[in-house]
Length: 611
DNA sequence: AAAAAAC
Image (tube, rainbow, N blue to C red; front, side):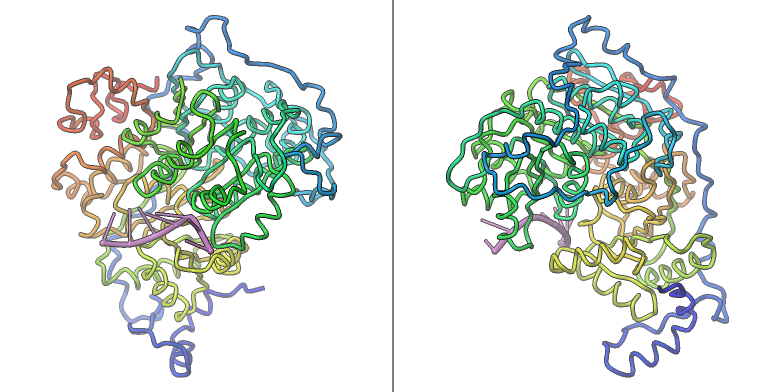
């Protein structure tokens, strides 16, 4: 075990002298000297404001109490198909129909227990257990829905008919009660409705779409699928933008479907395809995939989407942005997937810009829009700091920070730091710098082999290298426990990306710290960042406010994105109310171009549409 | 302009 990495930093000067003298590449900059070994105090003192106290609980704006079911009142008693109990007697689950998938029955090997225990499932719902999830942080979450006949939320898992096998897995996961997005999304999905869901990072979205899919597939256990040939016919497809995220979703889905007979397979690029083909041949109900590899398999006719009943896009706004949209359109519209209305489509993300919402509606039918989360996303659990750091000073500033962090950490054992940079080259060189200076770092980006990527992630998660330098490949969705600190070494150009990045900490109701290095290169982010921080009750440095007010705002992407981030707005409503008005132009009050007349929402001084 | 995603 390596406990003294940062102690070694103190000696890094001598270590490094030896290292660079021998074989490794020579650092281009002078060797890092930690502050306490220098004659002079660090020059950047004045830039770092004292960390703000986490502003939990109090001072929340725009929320006046539980939402309850009242919004749904319009629908009268016509809850569509909610509360069906077709398979209620699920019992032991796994029993007799393990072999139904695709008609393939290649032996009945014992299902690996993804929980790594002996299957003891003692505590019943309601019994408190240490789940690691801080539910108090979820108490005051505002919820907004729109669409026709929205099914009301549930309060407990017991209120939902997911079947005994799934209930048991929920207990094994130690989920005591559903998170807000789960409370709201699961009934909507169980009712068979299409859904566009916007919920803060770390709030349990994966389970929110997995449970209904699994329950739905269990209901359709006798569905006949074509067989013969080597084509497999999954009933559900879950797409995500990165391989590691797909892998993570797969792992989760395996837990949720343990002993249900529902088979989950993941496919993505960069890994041997033969192994994935073998997995597919053993039967697949839920296919988790990244787009490229899926298209490959579709073109080889190893997978057909003909029987898809459920389509989920995780990080849906990313999946539909410029880089991905053609592939997604191909998969959803130009292969053999059943059209809108013949399948159930669910889109999830923490952010949902209006343009993307507009695009997304092509894939949805009579859908419900759901926004869960306080104004300002999950960021109230994350203390955000911004420091003005010149480009040239970033490296030494980061090392000061990492070093100081070690000094003050109480529980340093398993406290991880995730450092985001803009480019793959930048990631390599920063990793190298840290390495040479005795910091236990590794890196992940798209130019590394898949093996290297997975190894880096494992090494980071385990604490072996508690510093991970990453590009945006790690910005979305990854659930890495114990990430205490996210550093935006380079700020992204888009405020949505910032939201996702800092969302790697402060997960499951826990608090986290996010530090950003700001300079002239990030000027376009000044305004949205200042606004975001203000709305999350963070300390906004005066200099940032000055930059924010100085910057010309053209109504460009950032401002648009910021408005959408809060999510919270169904573009269908926005459009009808604001027809012909200028959305992003002149509303200096909200700063997000959401007209105050529409409930404005984002400024504490304005009555919120969340109420 | 960069990142991601198939071989």
